[in-house]
Image (cartoon, rainbow, N blue to C red; front, side):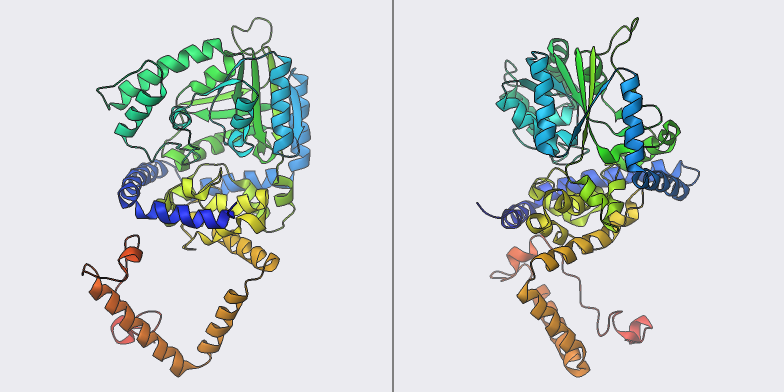
Length: 470
């Protein structure tokens, strides 16, 4: 089997050549940036908000063991069950055990990237459980037998006609459709999903936050499907990474609008719900059994890194993906991981092995846009460099080391350095001249890149024009 780095390069190159798809993706993200800018301007001070959110998450990480114990105690007091999973194997085993104890046949799921992380859907299918994703984007991807393209917007890469074709092929009895209208397509999915909610034995959700003070999980969504998943089946299983715990209920007052603004450009998501236990006497709905599965799966290892533990503060808003120039070109599937983009390139090597997934940290321009946009101020581009350094220590690359030594030698010889610069500018002008001509040897390379015009001597361009010192 090829190494992940090999198939990543293959998939990324194939995706980059699909310039029509990349343009469609960029147009969609441009709309997101406009909405986000408008939503940020409604804050009294967005900068003060990010400082407050960052401080809350820092406190949570520093007090993680204490807060997790408090979270468990409050849940148990309310009649919930808590399971601890060291890794994906234990997490899947807990869920399968619960389903078998309940003699369950049908499962409905709201969007939970933690379930994608632990490979739960494959385990449920292998166990013979009829499982349906109920988030519209996840449902579309399930029909297409594809993983989510983006961990906030799972099917953002698909055009309307592709969704229509997916429904025609994947939903029994639909037949050929004569509409691409999103509202009408949504109603078709709704009819299928409504029946599934009523027939399901178990609902599986994620958790955006876990409140240590009260023992509640908080779920934010825009479709209302999570509320049905959590309320209608007789059993509710919530999957939560241990880093999702926060100290106080009041912390949601800053974290939920921060998540909505950064993630989708909304002031607040449409539905914000708290769940803390099974149905009590007199309750009109809710599960008879409520289980929270707390999952480590590499998070403690990341917590032990004095530098990169910063990444555990992530609230999974997806903002870093939305501004990443690499993501905009290669898309989410090329990463081959649950968490794409800059944050995924930081945490995946820790969760799944630096030696295997360090190549993801090189899928970055190190432009710093991810760090600048992060609503909890994670120093993402510095962590990408850290992953590269750890990979270099674990498996030194003789060719790369020789290249840096050569560059260091070149910089110590100014005349030669300037000569190489002049040669480089000549080559750059030549490649721009060849653009569009028959037989252009750089055509394939140029298909996914834009060459800037050479600016003249020095890092700042021609000193006579720029006013610099060259």
